[in-house]
Length: 174
Image 1 (tube, rainbow, N blue to C red):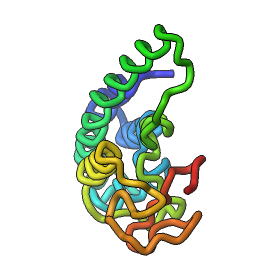
Image 2: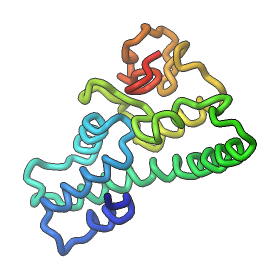
Image 3: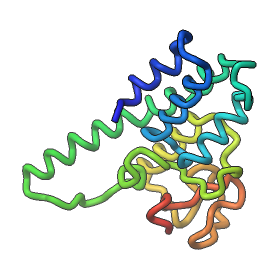
């Protein structure tokens, strides 16, 4: 499988057919999709007005990629730090981490998972990702309040009424 940076270069490559570039942008979401694949694509398509006939506005792909890369850049240092910490813990004989922030367990994708692809936070991806990461560092309990919008009116096992984010992520609903 090709890496995110390699695919991103293909999205920016204006010598490629715009339809191929759009497909490459969608391929980037296999590596990093903060809301899950479908909801992240819907967010990018609506926010950056990616047209159905991409030949009309191929620059929308680069705008969308820029937002996606900015959000990913926030996660990468924290993921590298966590990986280094885990290597040290494993050398010490601790095979199971003492505590796991939710974003660690989601593999840096679906950080703010939205089960309904049409309902996702309206803010830019970097803003939402930063909120989730900061809330995890601060020790906010995702079962008690929404990590994205801060809504205290949580419904167990359901997405947030305000922003559509499912607490605990796709595989770990709280």
